[in-house]
Length: 380
Ligand code: ADP
Image 1 (spheres, rainbow, N blue to C red):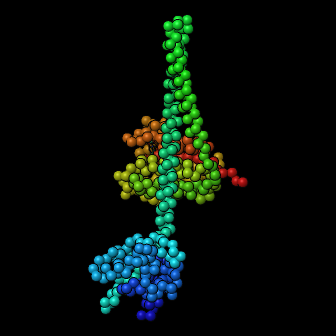
Image 2 (image 1 turned 90 degrees about the vertical axis):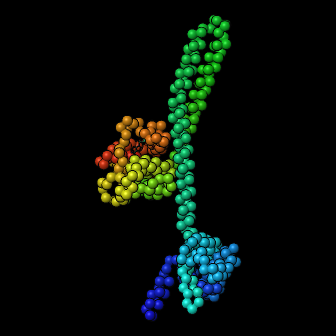
Image 3 (image 1 turned 30 degrees about the vertical axis):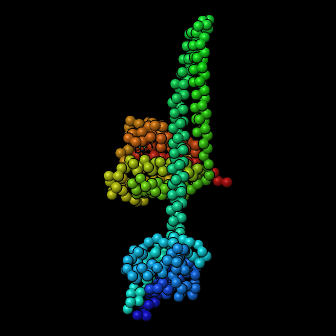
């Protein structure tokens, strides 16, 4: 019996969650060490007091009512169920906690045990991840717009140049002696001037997009890879996929714009996940072995001879579509029904701005391997 009691004490003393027991009227009977750390009270300060001192308003005032209602109706709102509640530390700080309550009854005397977990760190991490995700989504849209306008500018500037030349040529054909054609010549001249102006606007727009400079700093590529994988899995509309990592552990820092390279990795991961499809979700495996099972995505990072780090993202999908294999990285090239064909073009622009290279080939499994390189950051 004694041994049991010691063991129980040990469990309570070492439990990472706070354990607090109260009687049927809400009086605190015990307060575990984790509860002391969580709430900032010593046991002497709370033992015998009403548990409501650990709650913010309006629960502080209403908790006695909750207990009375339970006693009268037997309706369980938290007992045996567990829920998120607001709690208050001694210093007044209010935090979100998860509480599960167990009940014990003897001779009509109730004892409730509350197991309380502080969710502050978890919620903060979730908020941070969601914030990062929103930032990336926004950036991705801006980059797509940039890429699209740049491609549009390229496409439209040729017909505009042709309009200018034809207008000028027609003006010359009309000759300059015949005053009846004065008006027509004037209009043709205007057409040529307007077309030139439109061309200038497009050129400036293109320059603006291309000037979007990368903020290059030494970065740990493996960390970037892990972060991007975590972020890409957060997408609610994306079927989750397992990822096999094969990251060399002696890599030097690379010179990279953190957010932009995350964008590249996420784009490639999404394409890989889409190529894998989701019919065989059960077949997706994680392993650190050689790239062998189909339907898994492998992520590699290693150093090459040219003082660059090579990143590869491979999948077990059908491989590169032959009809567009030469034009994969061009804007608006897509084989997907709802595809924009912009993702890989964005990747190419970003990698080029990093002085790296990007290319794709078919892997041994018949799936696609997308590779890119980043220069190693020079040591100070
Ligand atoms: P989108 O995904 O909108 O089509 P992308 O530029 O990202 O635009 O991709 C262009 C095309 O490249 C895709 O439509 C697809 O045909 C091909 N592609 C990209 N990634 C892969 C991959 N991992 N496996 C096979 N084909 C791919």
